[in-house]
Image (cartoon, rainbow, N blue to C red; front, side, top):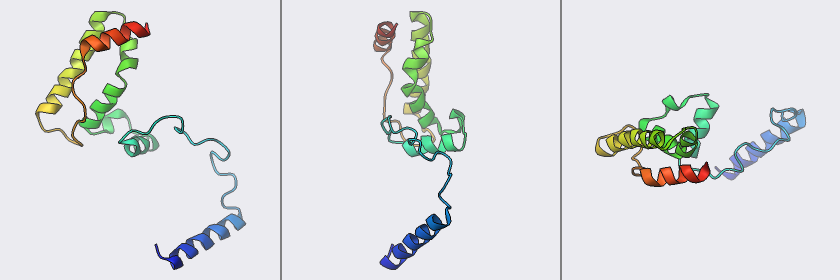
Amino acid sequence: MSDRQARGVDRAIQEAEARGDFKNLPGAGKPLPGLDRPLHDDWWLHQQAARDSLGPDALPPALRLAKEREDLPAALDALADEAAVRAAVGELNARIRKALIGPVEGPPLRFGLVDADEAVAAWRSRR
């Protein structure tokens, strides 16, 4: 952006402010959502999906798997026994394995299989 363009933008903002265009905006005086959470590599995609009210099915399979893996501890906490935890990890690992072997829509996976023994140990420690 050139100096001239920057001055024009600044002038337009000042004029809008003088007219009161920025008063009573939704969320005024409230903290920005998500400031307390770390950003993930695909933060922009999560923001866009939330803004567009898109469900997890709108994500490409690779990103949907990443989200499932990220949310796995909470999903496992809802299960009653170790067999169910191992079955859930096994189902997720089957989908991850398929994505690792064959072409998958979206970005490449940046993670591998979930260790079932580690997942069960973490599940036990959270109970």
